[in-house]
Image (cartoon, rainbow, N blue to C red):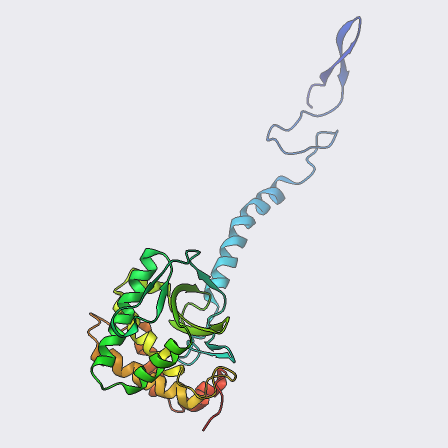
Length: 266
């Protein structure tokens, strides 16, 4: 039987000790009752401590194990609306509004942004002008004329929908084409086919005012694929080039494009 322990007592005249029948205090740092008994059984506390990392590990595993359906080519270039060609979600644009003329055939286009984005955008435009100069892409010249007539600008932006490589919109009666900022971090001429896509969409007779038509988007995909073949873009195709080829090779590309919001103009 354990020896009774003493607890200190005191007064202003001094301090002393008196016996008590309380059992020894636990020394593991866990809370105890006045009797010295643990508030929680030690095995229960140990189980809780072990379960915390186990629960976190299971949660992470379950999140990573979710079977995510990959986006189709059509879903990576969804229709925008009456004033946007391709939906790109929110966009982060450079706050710098400095502008310089585009190269070659696009000198009437204003390239807006910081020096890095201007350099990438101009290089992508040079590729488009090379295609126009061959005379084999009359639709691109038509789109360029429409863009110039709309007091056109070209800007580089980071898109919320990262799979989208380019988009065009109407802002203050001005036609602004936006190029995905990823082309700043690779050969920017790989962005030329993405601009081809937009120039063809600008020829749609119903846009702006209506969503781009499905036949226009199919024609844009075909010309984008041709541009990918003609331009020397280095090793490997860009995501946009693969998407154009995949879309055109689909069992029913019209149905795929209608599903992502393009206007039925057949």
